[in-house]
Image (cartoon, rainbow, N blue to C red; front, side, top):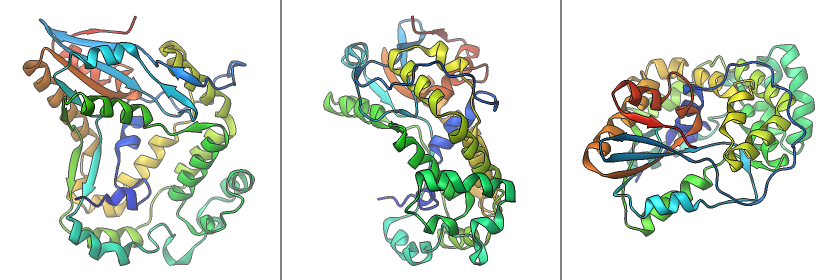
Length: 335
């Protein structure tokens, strides 16, 4: 059994989402003008088509997941279900997680108390630039009016709480439901499931937690970018969510937004506690290498493999699909 530590760190020693977003995110520019389409699609939606990676008669089908998505959207794709019925292996999404043994994890619970708080009892107003704190206050009042404890938290945790509340109020969720449903179909059909997540082995988790509590994080920029995202991008989030639901990848690629995920991931992985923990070195590259290795292995072994991967891993010149193409595989985009 595992105790996820970065889940305890609110980005919760589960770096999957942050790492996925930093891989091929759009440039951090002000949001493009959102189209007037701000009504979220609900009901049953198929999402985008599948990328086809092949060599000879061996095929890897890749389904691009996305976040955020409409809360009330029910995902269903006949194409995905048909392909899964013929698939020998399902590859889980790339990511990283840290864990310790269950009983060792229980001993950490007392030390996790106060983990989110700023060192030395500081409040947000003490650690943020005045202009950032001034922008924080109206958004806090709008999305976290009943949460006064957040004022004592580190900026990176305050940013996460604010962003989640903002999405909820906008009728959006951070996703995960589509991946869970596909994994459930694979399990129901008794398809071999292969995790591609990199395990971050922590030799001394108790010391890491103590180091984190004392460590300063350069996370004011994380909150700054999160504020900008909520100030400028809510309508565009709805447009991108609708575009994914309709399978319109071109719209997703065109709409740019302030990239708070990159800033927040960098704040966590560049902190002193992370630099002193060998397991946290070169995580991004290790995640990329692990997924590519699993993809090549499955392509060699199976006539049909299915994978779910965050869309940000699949778009752009440095994407996982571009890497497979460089290795000699045929890569065909959805029609």
